[in-house]
Length: 85
View 1 (cartoon, rainbow, N blue to C red):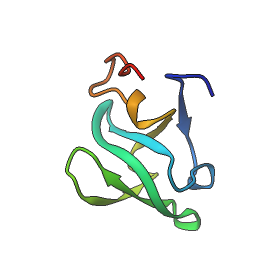
View 2 (cartoon, rainbow, N blue to C red):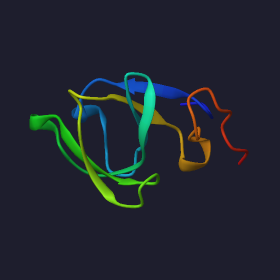
View 3 (cartoon, rainbow, N blue to C red):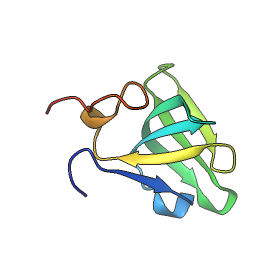
View 4 (cartoon, helix red, strand yellow):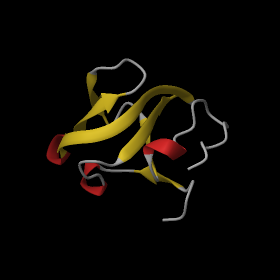
């Protein structure tokens, strides 16, 4: 994966603890953070959400999940440039 590359994730089986993701609902950023646990057989996973500061349970069926390279490269808003390393 190259710096700043984003990958749309279709299933929890493609996520691992430590992956940094953004979650969008109808194109709007609603969550951003790193994966802590997952329950792939149910399409659920937990993140430490940087936006709210808390732990969140996310459902793959409700959101578009995009894995990003690292926390420093997570855009603050859709279309924003990644932060410099």
